Length: 114
Image (tube, rainbow, N blue to C red):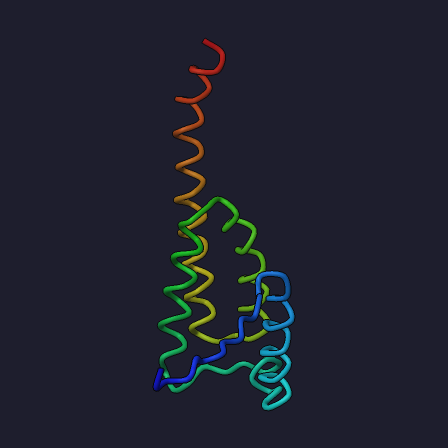
């Protein structure tokens, strides 16, 4: 044989994957802790993307009704225009979720009792 056999090293990560995730998190936070503790949007992309995320989160389940008071307090403290827009967006999503619960509750109630 002209080629020497290559020795391989196998690492089993299935038992200790959480140490790998913790090490990556600590290395990122130790480099720039302000990114984690003081997040800021870059340029004007933040308001648009944040509104999209709030819209998807608001329409994905009835728990969006719990976010409405938080958004109201956040707008009241900040008094910024885009926070008021997010508050209105969450109110709209909460009304859609409430209407969905109200109109589907009557249909499922008759199936359970009848």
